[in-house]
Structure formats: C-alpha cells, structure tokens
Amino acid sequence: MSESFYTSPPAGTAPPGAPISPPPPTSPTSAVGAPPPPPPKPISHLSQSADPSRSGTPILSSAPAVPSKVDSPRPPPPLPAEQHATSSPVPGLRPIPPQDPYQPIPPPSISERWLPSNVSNKPLNELQPLLSNPSLVASLASQHPSYASSLIPLERAIQQNVQLAQQVAQLESQIRSLRDDTAQLLLNHTSLHTQWRRKQTEMDDALAPWGPRQMYQRLASSINEQEALLKAMQESFLEGGTDSDAYYGGPNNGKASEKEVSEWVRRIREGATVLEKRREMRARWDEGRVGGWR
Image (cartoon, rainbow, N blue to C red; front, side, top):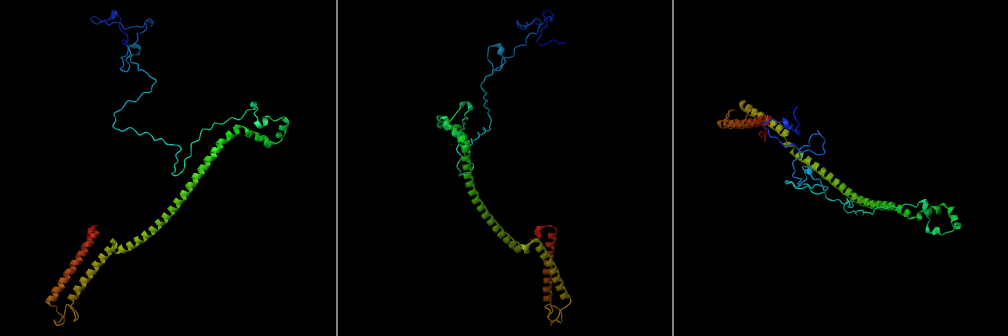
C-alpha cells in the first residue's frame, strides 16, 4: 500500500543518496502516534494577515457585499416609478385623502367601576329610578370615550362611501355622454355603410358589361357573327346576283366587273383578318394569357 501524502518514511528507511527532508511540524497537543496536520494553505490575496491560522480564510464582515462594477455595453435598468396610492385612476376626480391610523380606546373593565361624571356624584335614592329604565341604563354606555372611539371607523367608512358614490355619479354622467356619442357615431356609420353599399352596387352594375365573363361572351358571339358574315358574302357572290345586287349591276347581264371583284376580294380579306384576330384572341384567352383579350 502506498504511503499517505501527509506521512513521511522513517529516517532509517530512506534510500541512499536521497535528500532527507526535515519532519513536518507537529502539534504539542497531538496524541502519540497521530498523523501530523496537513500543510498550511497558501496565503490568499484576500487575507494579508500575518497570523498563520487565518491563512487562506476569507475575511467575513457584517457589511453587505457591494457588487463590483461591470463594464457592460448595456445601460442599467430603469428604476421603478413610485406610484402614489392616493392618486385617482380617473382624470377629473378628486383623490381620497389619506387618513390617520386608527387607535381604539378600550372600554372600561368591571374592576374600574367607571361611572359618568354626571352620575357619580348622585345619591343612591336618585340613582334607583335609573335602574328601572333600560334606555337610560343603555345611554350610560355612550358616555365613555371608547364609544366615540368605536364610531370612528364607521364614520370613516361612511365618508369614504359617500366620496365613492360621488365619483360613481360623475363617472355615470361621463359614461352616459360617451354612450350617446357612440350611438350617434354608430348611426352615422350605418348610414355611410348603406350609402357605400348603394354606390358599390351602382359601380358593379356599370362595370358588369366589362367583366371577364361578359367580354368573353361578346368575343365568342363576335366570332360567330363574323363567320356568318363572311359565309353570306361568299354565298351571295358565288350564287350570282339579281338586278338589285350591289355586285351585279344589271347592264353586264349578271356578271361582275373587275372592279367589283377586286372590291369583293378586299372585303373578304378584311373580314377574314378580323375573324382570325378574334379567334387568336379567344385561343390566347383559353390558354390563360391575360393580355390576349385586352
């Protein structure tokens, strides 16, 4: 078993050539055969006392520790604002003033044998009728200062209730005026909402012909009309005309002139161009290309 750190080998068992260290100091009060005390702790920078028994032990003081200043970029937190308990939460109302602490006066005990001053100097024959009247006997209790002292909390509570009732009355008038204003604003809002609905309906009706569905329907009907127009122009020219036909003037015996033929071809080309444009617009619309129908 390895030797303890705090024990040293005997002088006779030291290996040859090894330096012999002096034995550690031992306490004169230690028992024989007890291990020596541990080595002293290093002197702390907090304790500069020359007493070795205080080495490494922090100095305790009764004063609270002051936090050291920390170089932080953050600003210190703001201090909480003091709130006055007497301040009124509603503007325009008078706050309830603070009251002095109540110090009650104890009632007299039986051993004191207290009597009012206007009764204590009366003889017994005059006091005898008082005992037969319960109301007079009860009135004697109101003569002691403890009776008036017991009424102080009640009077304060009544006064506070009166002040609160006045504040509630003021708040009631304010709430009533605010309620009337709110009702008027609600009526105005309802009227404006109705007018807006009417204007919105008129605008929707005015823009209905220019909606996507209506424009697509007009585009489809215009394609059908253009196809029917071209078909009618072709059939009327190929079938031949009458005396009232524009392409057959009568003197040519039902035969169109070169000028009339060129005019008919030009009109057919223009109509076919318009028809192809409308078909292309419809195809682009069906493909989801929004710019095709604008």
